[in-house]
Length: 49
Image (cartoon, rainbow, N blue to C red):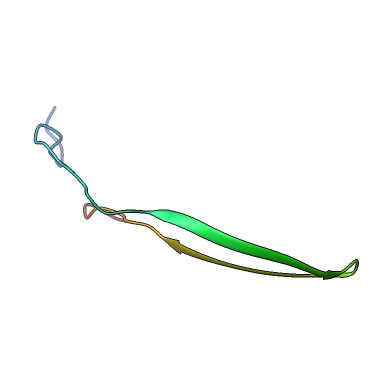
């Protein structure tokens, strides 16, 4: 049965990008919390819907 080839997984791939997430939380008082975060991710190209 033949179909549409979406990707070729026979090759080799190396990824050197650094990813991660940093967060800061500060409790101002018992009713208030401030938070901030920064993140960086990487999604390789390919077939998307």
